[in-house]
Structure formats: C-alpha cells, structure tokens
Image 1 (cartoon, rainbow, N blue to C red):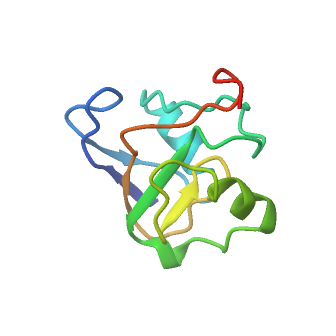
Image 2 (image 1 turned 60 degrees about the vertical axis):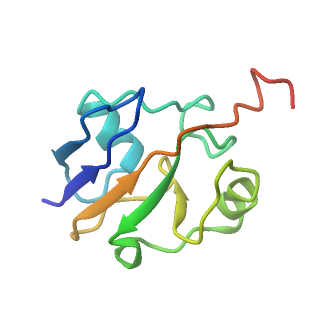
Amino acid sequence: MPQIIVLPHEEICPEGAVLNADSGISICDALLENGIEIEHACEKSCACTTCHVIIREGFNSLEESDENEDDYLDKAWGLEPDSRLSCQAMLAKEDLVIEIPKYTINMVSENH
C-alpha cells in the first residue's frame, strides 16, 4: 500500500499530510477519500485542469499520461515537467510526494 505525502498547501492542506492509499486508484480519489478536498470541476473526466498536481517524488512509478491529459496539462497554471492531472494518475506501488499548486484554472467557472 503506497503512501502519498502531500506537501503543505495554504488552503487545502495547511499542515501537509501523509496518506495510505490502495494501488490502482487515482491520486484524486485517494486525496478525496482522506479528506483533502482537491478541486475536480469536471468530476474526474479529464476535461479540466483543476486537479493538477506536481509529483515531487515517485513520478516514474506512474503510467505515462495520454494525449488527452497532456492537452489539458498544457493549460494548467504552474505546469512543470512532473505535473499530472490527479484524476488520471493511478497509484502504483511506490510512495509519492505531491504538491498541489497554489492556483488552479477552472475554465468552466471562469468562462474560458
């Protein structure tokens, strides 16, 4: 059972967190199941960037992103080489350290 270490985020997780999660579920689901209310405006259908996270450790344990996820990631605020949409990145067996970016772009509510 991998652990997810969530780095402190001013609003969503001020103290940071260490979570245990099952392999095979999305990072987004693992966060939500553990009370970390990461935004997911498209209801986890890979149609926005609100659940964008940066994988600080363990990135290579995740399956590669597909073309659709890459297209949305290109629109994410604060994109980095180790960025993923948490609704699409499925946990493997390796622990992860993730950072939730300070800002997000909600294309639906912001009329983009």
